[in-house]
Image 1 (cartoon, rainbow, N blue to C red):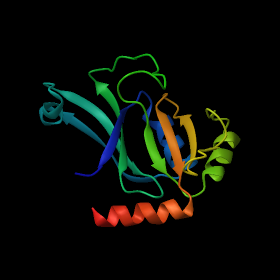
Image 2: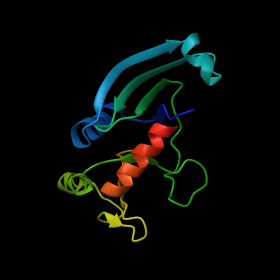
Image 3: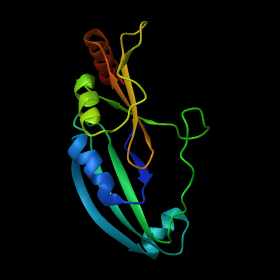
Amino acid sequence: MMEHHVGFAVLDLNKIIHFYQDILGFSVLDLGIREGKEAGAPLGLPYVKYKILRAMPPKGDFFIQLIQFLDPKPKQLPTRGHTDLGFNHVGIEVDHIEQIYHKLQSHHIPTESPPIVMKESGVQLLYTRDPEGNILEFVEFPRERKRELERLRQSV
């Protein structure tokens, strides 16, 4: 098995498209509307109508699905914290974490801290949230770790 995609249900697809495409540089793969019994069946619903966007990060081995449910209407849940049980965050590998940090800062998007270098591994981490509160972790590996990871990926 391997990762394929991560899906987020969102309230405002237009606002979230701007964040992922214009600020983070994701490429939009497709955007559409799904509706009817067939669209609802995999979700265990008799009927559903939603807008869906699929987008891939610049260094993409997976994509994200952003879904705005139109019918039935979604219920707003409290924003999850880092230590809450269940789904926690999406990790995205990047090459230039400092550039991402500065871009987020220039758009007044808060981060948990500046990029942090983990002493033991040399990995740099940066956490932020998208406009709807979903936690994103950006990860930059040092060169030697990148080569090691690439060998592991090819051997699987």
